[in-house]
Image (cartoon, rainbow, N blue to C red):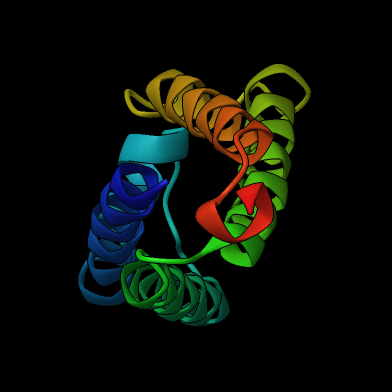
Length: 124
């Protein structure tokens, strides 16, 4: 579980920082679109801050983060659903869209597997 949280911390914090600094570039890579309105850039930056917060939370909980892994499982499943809808339902495309779907699917699977193992506290 520790490795999962460390990797998640790095990925989410990195993506979040990218959204904070260059939100339009992230949108272009992810969905092949631009953030033309100032409101869209603002919302993207808020999402970036949220991802940085997730990264920090994962890093801080890396030694005993079962509850956080449950939250990250929900987040990854939701991210897959939203991104898959963007690809299939909205016909958006960016070079990073399907890799992001695959990555979040893998992370969701990893979370589910990590939760299936008892922790030292529950094993006693």
